[in-house]
Length: 113
Ligand code: 5GP
Ligand code: ZN
Image (cartoon, rainbow, N blue to C red; front, top):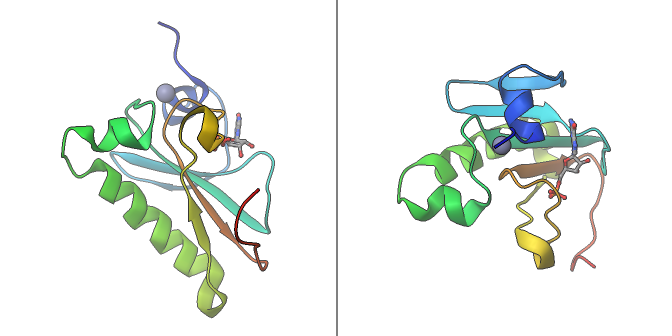
């Protein structure tokens, strides 16, 4: 099976603007930002969705949220930030490698469309 786009970014085969990396988690700038700060936090290992990433009961889903919340706090400051995990077709997921969006730097509407 060919690697997905985020697997290729995680392994360095294609470039991205990385803002964080550890053994298990990578964070990059989104190519098509929807806010002044728009980061994507995803695991080095491939999992299709957040449901898959958490299904084994391991710490991975929590690790993604931890990194995302830290980056959101750094970027958003007192004004705040938003974490989004689009999942499946109805959730609007377009890249099938779980990722947490970190959005900050502008006031965002709720509910989403
Ligand atoms: P989703 O719609 O799956 O929740 O979000 C996928 C996100 O990945 C989109 O915001 C899109 O702009 C971003 N994206 C897609 N391909 C690339 C890429 O090659 N590099 C980067 N940095 N972001 C990408
Ligand atoms: Zn992947």
